[in-house]
Image (cartoon, rainbow, N blue to C red):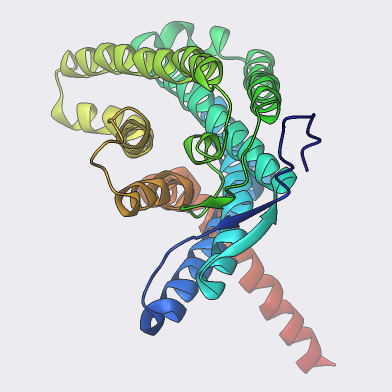
Length: 324
């Protein structure tokens, strides 16, 4: 809830319209999103568990991947429960403070994902382009410092932006034609001048989205050049496979972000905006564990070991029961 001054209207409740789908497919959309949510949480929790307990995965690349999974769980839990409610009820009612909180955690997860993808790219750059310096440069002390820096920057910078938004004057209009509280839909509810907030978000986006994206592009240019210098084709494929999963996620994630936030909104319908928003808020957290697990032999081996270990325990338990 926002405490208003003399000339401010008290905006306490916000209506999220969600997806205005035909009633005949409402339950289909609901169950699809529910399955996506369950698979997203289970898949990312599996990666965190594997990286934590499997000694073969105790390396910088998988440590950063586990942090990316934490970010994916955060954004999925922040967005999807309210989205599921909005799908069933055709709209959902939340308080203004809850809306601001949802935006805050959404933006924290998005900012941390940008920074973590950049750190992961730097890890792949060192491993492929500077292999002799990799062990010395990418030690676990450095990895912990990088991860802590990513999370601290995300939490603090987004907090500044969120506090600035909360100081705006908001009108009586309290309907957002979206499935979550995003930046521009929230600004549309404001009666005051939002130019300062938009300038602030432009500067922050340049620092924490555009510059990391530029670093990723430059790093992959060097990576690709290094790969093409390898004489053996099989060696090229093996080296490229170590960064192909990361490159796939970067293309999906930044591609949808660019479409939503950099392409002018004039002439772009809200239905298209909602669909593109689904890609980086719902599809990307789902696809991260799937892409990495399908393309990564180390993760597959760890999963096989856990499955065989569980089956062995189950067999021994049944054998002991039958023996007794």
